[in-house]
Every structure is written in C-alpha cells, then in structure tokens.
Image (cartoon, rainbow, N blue to C red; front, side, top):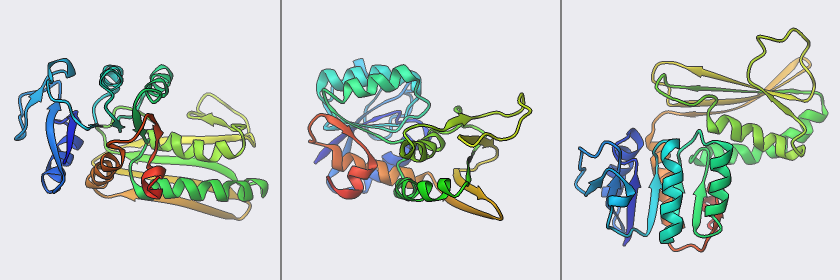
Length: 253
C-alpha cells in the first residue's frame, strides 16, 4: 500500500486526485495539507506540513509557488519522494528543487501529460531540420481565466525542448509591443491567452516560406493531469534520491 500526502488537497487538482486515489487498490491518501483546511475529504487535513504527524511514502503536490520551499524542506528532512506539479517557480526555487533532489527523489514536470512529454521528444527531432530550413518558431498557449502565471510552465518547457537542441542560442520574446523591427532569426516568441474555462492548449508553430507546420496539444479535462500524477507517484515511491521526469515514468526507469 502506497501512502500519499496530498499537498494542496483542497484545490481543484487536489480534489480530482483525491477522488482518483479512492478507486486505487494499492494507494491511499494518508493525509492532506491545505491552507484552507476546512474540507476534510475523508482523510485528515492539516493547515501546514508542521502539523502533519503522518509519514507518507510519497507526496503529490498541486499547491502554489509560495508553498514549494517549505514542501521541499519537509521532503528532504524526512526523506520523502515528491511529485512536484506546481508551476510558476522562480529561478531560486528551481535551484532549491535541484538541491532537494540530491537528498530525496523529486519528480518535476511542467506538464504531467503523456502527450506533452511525447510532444517534447518530437520537437527535439523536428527543430534542427526546420530551423536549418529557415523556419521561425513561435509558441502559443491558452488557459482559463483563473490561471495565475503566464506564460505557462508547459509553454516554457516546450520552448526549452527546442532551445536545448541549439545549446540555448535562441532568445525568448514575450512582448513585441515596444519594438519596431523585423523579427530576428534567433528568437522564439511565446504568447499567452487567458479566457473562459480553457483547460490547456499549446501550439508550437514552425513558420517557413509558403508553409507552416504546427505541433499542438489540447487538454480537455484536468483529470488528464491527475491520472498522470497518480502514475508518477506509483513510480516514484521507494526510488532513490535524484531528479526524475515524466520521461522516466513513460520509460519505466
């Protein structure tokens, strides 16, 4: 039996994952932590990690960026693996994640879906061919009007998947409104759309002379991310310290 601590249990994704784990035979949520600890969900819920006496096998985190440093400290102190799904982390927090991975198992992914992670793999293969042929690269992401960070962590991860191939020679451009010049060759434009209840749409556009190639992914339900987070937790429980990704879950190693 894998005992899970759901960090951010009363948020949207925390509630989705709580219901999913109820249906799992070999998993259970031992406890939840949420700043809003009123809703109990059928398991004990605490307002902070310091109040939680349970010792889980793995943490699933869908909280807020402000709570991540405390979570990492908790996981490293107690040697508990963590599936870290919160986005919008600062550079300092990303460095903290790497430090934590030296002491415990951390699985971090800007997007938990199988499709997005496969898309990153395809982009790494396609980008050298298309860039060499003079194609410009743009990333467009769309999310619901309640999303706090922009651009999305997934949009940055998709751009990174391309830029890593070129040893980070491309500049990211988020706003062209203050600039009056032709588009430079070595840039990746990243645009964010916020509106309605859009769960998540991402497009990577390669625009060339007389043709456009678009790689796209659409999420229709938050359940998609919940299912992948649960599978990631199954994979991570009991793993040695290190930095893991959904690619490891897909490959099983």
